[in-house]
Amino acid sequence: MSLSPGVPAIIMACCLALAALAVSMVAGLAANNPTDVILSRALVSMLGGLAAGIIIGKIGERCVRDRIASTPMRAGRVGELGGGASVHENGHDGTSPTTHSH
Image (cartoon, rainbow, N blue to C red; front, side, top):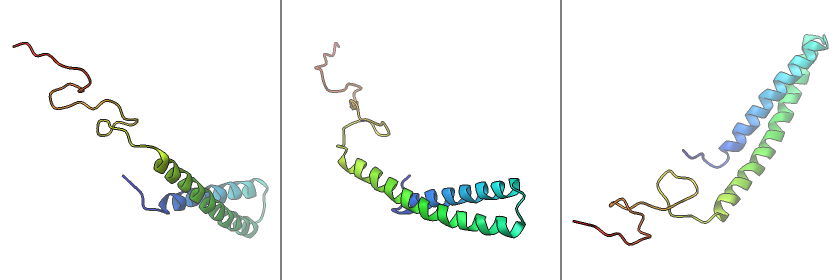
């Protein structure tokens, strides 16, 4: 599964914004603030979290993209991370001569 460019940054931003909203609302309720003060501060916190999340997400996305681009591809089995020896149809890895006794 691969994500389109920009999607990981948006996901990060949304998660951070919701976390900021929740923390702000709980803090406002714990301080016994009026409802309008809690909601207005929570909205500002959510927008700040959204902006910070977009920045953090873009930086993280760029780091991952650069790391993937700088990593050489290695031969290996499909689905195996980090490469490894590939196994041919006959069951041997092709690195040593095989002798067949018939």
